[in-house]
View (tube, rainbow, N blue to C red):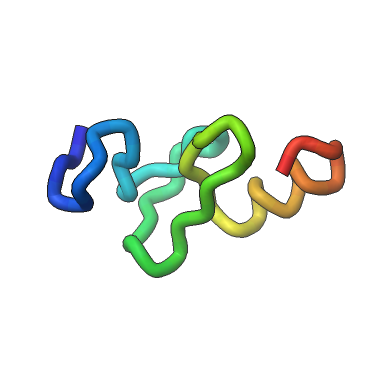
Length: 50
């Protein structure tokens, strides 16, 4: 976990779905509060979960 961002459940470093390394600026958070890259986030949105 990375606590530098003030919330322990927001590790802005890896995509939850594909495991891609993320910088804080490119991390997205879906409705389930899963941190993910833009590509996986958009895929989740297409599935109605984003």
